[in-house]
Image 1 (cartoon, rainbow, N blue to C red):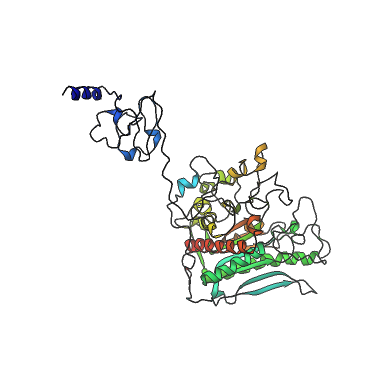
Image 2: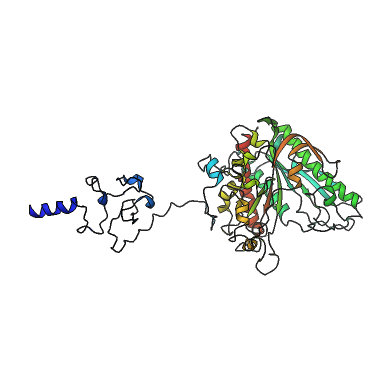
Length: 496
């Protein structure tokens, strides 16, 4: 009895001399003793159940120590005692899509607030919606029109697509910088600050994307417009003056090639409108389709054997920046530092039609979990032998701000001196083919009017383009799956 009385006295006084270092797993009978509770709120010093104590910052003793075990239970000990080691946290469950490392850190991002990751699935099953249950798809892509240089057999511009518009897919792909023809009958472009190097393998990736869409889904054939001329002879992604700058001999041929390239894009858009029709959102009428302008970039001085010292830092496997840059004609700053980007108002950027539709927002279309960038990011584990960062897209749910990457020394060499790496926001093609009525005869800038057509640009990194046949093919399959999922979520099921 005497011993029991002494023990009760110790407990009533709050002394812990006889239980120093003990972990309290069940405090149901000791709630009146704060020092023995499994968690003490920093707000009101009262006891709280385990479910409210998972964050160690809320588990504290009056002396200021913070110790919780893996179950969220408070581990109590006096201040002068040697602190107990905090058990390692339970490892997270294994996920199928690896997270690129390192990820940019910072406060909650804008798409976190407006486009939660609990949004509908960001990808489409690889074989759905397949129309024909056949081993070999019977749809094929054929050449529909060409522009051949006068007096030669050289095909300079080509339009490819389905034999019948009834078999069309709601997608138009353009490859303006992937051609390799350098005919002597056209002078080379020359002038201050112009770019004359080709976007290597972008034509090949464009063709692989089109074929992957056909083979995987067999629901339709996209349209593909190709500039076969090398960029030193024609830059089809520029207004006419810069596209042909410095050319004297062959200027008429170069100018007609430029006209045909953009005319063929518009022709393909008209075909898509004929099958898929239009829809009207908040005062905006547009075609139910997508224009995809394919490009590639280096991002630094990585052409040599030496590591990059300017611009974007190299991918770990190859010279050149690792990121895929998605362009919606929005500047990295201030447009893509705005939150949400819907607040920009007006017709800034592309996707004017898509963002006007019911249950759509510009913020989520551009960098939500179901954006093109995030859909591709989620599928990159299907591409063998690439680095964690190779192909990761910005803007996206994972990398919402190109500006944050472009000013971070982790990714950009120039940021060390207060500089900024370049972000490709979308060029001439995306600008003029966002509208259906384009008057190419008006120079220097064609006039734009009529219905809208959703348009975006992709700048592919060298780690994808120069990765070899397997990586290019695998990535095209990823693009196909991401694009089909995006189209079906935006435009609804295929109209068979």
